[in-house]
Image 1 (cartoon, helix red, strand yellow):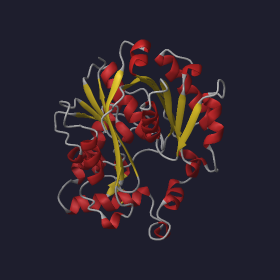
Image 2 (cartoon, rainbow, N blue to C red; image 1 turned 90 degrees about the vertical axis):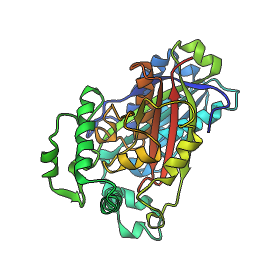
Image 3 (cartoon, rainbow, N blue to C red; image 1 turned 60 degrees about the vertical axis):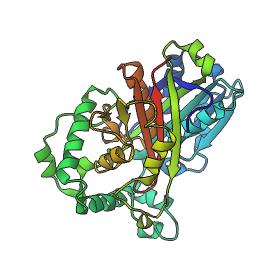
Length: 355
């Protein structure tokens, strides 16, 4: 939905993306919160509301987010919340909270250490307990099913998927936070073995440990704190049926509805888009659903194929989109996050340059 109370991103920080880190989630968050508040020109004491996105399944313990509050600081007292979702949804909650008008500054975080366990064992446990969890199908298996549907329908080709992988990892060379980057030959990629037919290694994101923090401020407070606020002009998320078997996997209805609700087509052209397309075949599905033409730069940071910190990947997309506006001179950017099997739930955030 379009904002009724103007809210801007005024600072952010993305951690180094690593295959395995020695830091706890609290330590990862301590670093990015310190850097994000410094980037915004504020202290922790200036934050009125915090919302964290993380996952107990990934952390391997119940109420794991409680210890992460140590990174935020308990004094002076502040309002706090948590979502068992990617940090992009934490940012959405913080944005909604600022719409009430009684608080000025909010902080959203996302963090995850995927290296601590086997994702193929963990993620099926989060599926529908009656029909999906017993199958033991992990995220890669579900993605492979969708990729096969798209290939059989003639909507994508394996070469197109490999070309996307080569492009995003080439773009990631300029990203200091990227975990996977470099020049890749498309024919060499296509010669690789399948991990889950029809997905090869290059079609999959890396396993990543990382965190992200983003600072929001309301209206005049944002203008007071920075002369270059990045305004959130549209924000929406939509979910569809969790069961992939009752959806048309050739399209993403929820992404299209979220884009419409966020007003993507109403405020002028999109210059750049950061999409949480963790698998190569998801990019063409999302660009079609979001109405993004060939003139839009897609994932100039390298996207999730370059680094995929579960529970922070979507929030990183918002931070990278904000960076494109503030540091790269873009006027209007789209950030996207997704959750659930086969693009089941989608979030769209529209950002525009300061005014």
